[in-house]
Amino acid sequence: MTVTATSVDQPDQPDQPDQPDQLEPRPASAARRGRLVRLVPAAASVLCGVLLYVSFPPRTLWWLALPAFAGFAWVLRGRSWKAALGLGYLFGLGFLLPLLVWTSVEVGPLPWLALVAAEAVFVALAGVGVAAVSRLPAWPVWAAALWTAGEAARARVPFGGFPWGKIAFGQADGVFLPLAAVGGTPVLGFAVVLCGFGLYEAGRLLAERRRDRTVRRAAATAALLSVAVPVAGAVAARALVSDGAENGTATVAVIQGNVPRAGLEFNAQRRAVLDYHARETHKLAADVRSGKAAKPDFVLWPENSSDIDPFEYPDAAAVIEQAAEDIGVPISVGGVVERDGKLLNEQILWDPAKGPTQTYDKRQIQPFGEFLPLRSLVGAINKSWTEMARQDFSRGTEPGVFDIAGTKVGLATCYEAAFDWAVRDTVTHGAQMISVPSNNATFDRSEMTYQQLAMSRIRAVEHSRTVTVPVTSGVSAVILPDGRITQRTGMFVPAYLVQKVPLRTSTTPATELGALPELALVLVAAGGIGWAVGSGPRARRGGGA
Image (cartoon, rainbow, N blue to C red; front, top):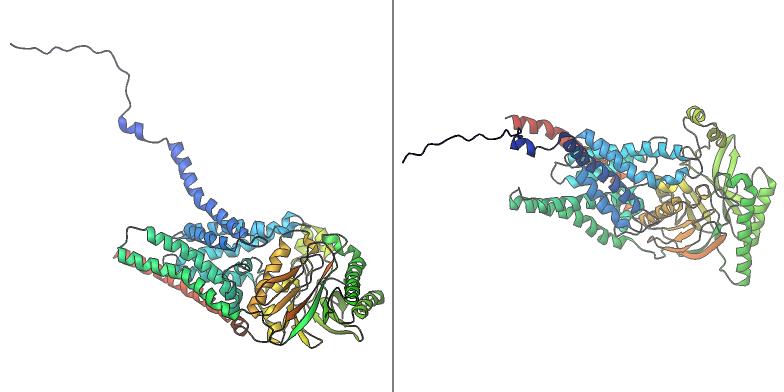
């Protein structure tokens, strides 16, 4: 039987789109996703910078610096120099904006933002270097050295440098602290950054599956060594840290007189500040006579405790003289004096019988605080800033070491504590202990005073010396050579501290070597950059062949 196929008319159907078109994403959605993906490294850079800030005092979360640098390594590895510059700058902003916010306490946000914008450039340039060496063997070593080179530059330029925010200054409570005695702040900071980069590289290599297993394990072992070696070095360096008395002891009194008001106007009542410190010294003298306090061998007043020049104004000299006579021992007074037309931030040793006998003039003075660079430009922006700093301070030329009752006391006034050389040369000139007289009243209750206190703790270990920190408004403290704070005051309260402290004359490797470890790390950084730059053309030629 023959079957005949017949056609059946079908109703008209609307055109259906081809199947492949249905699977294509909408262009707008794809663009949005692309933008979000590109934002991830930028957001990560900022967050890692904030994490690094959180590792700094007054918090004791020093270990957060390690994941901060591990995340920074993840962001930078293999990036182009343009991308690394931007990502490094964002990391710098995330770190420095909150760290330096205290600079805006009395003068507003503009100087703070300008300072951070300038300082973050150094971080950005270090980021470019890290990205450039990130393809080299053992790259965490080269990268950590590049970070140290960036800190070295930042501590010197512009206007004499601004080393605030050195990685070492966030490690006063950390396991790496003893490394300060080995090579100072450069070696301590290098170890922390190396450990952070090494953590990232070890994790990356252990998770990688494309390489030969043997090669991967060898590379991961090298990365792990970049973590293990700094930790082992810190443990071994503990032998250099001691609080023992090598040359007897001295009983020291630290006076915190407090100020009438916080902020830039604290010195509007300069006589009151002087009277407050004299009053607290008289109180100490009364407590010594009643047996409530031990009699000190000498007394240390803070920076700016007498902003009235005692060489020019007899009434100010009389106030200091009466305090010295009452306590019966020499007082180191922080004064502002004018000599030969020069304005000087000066420490004056005032003997109860002889009057002023020794002086030290601050050498590392603070830009935009004690001298005003670009004065005409600053005046055009805000005339009141130039009016507040009508005359620049002049720099001292000689290291400050007072011989007080047989004890040699090195002096690093306030801002100077941030500079390696300014503290070291007091020790190389014979200091058996160090004093860091400071005035933090300008910055109210900000984190600045705690950041600066941590610097003094690092210096104590670096040079194996007791460090005293007399501050006008707090926090004043006594720090032993192992970095421990044994006594401290509150903020904006009058107080005195009296303690018998060890005197030491032995020197650490950091004291002996001075800037040599930093120079060596800068040369390592330069070698890494040279290798990375040189390997680029060779790699391209090899790829073409």
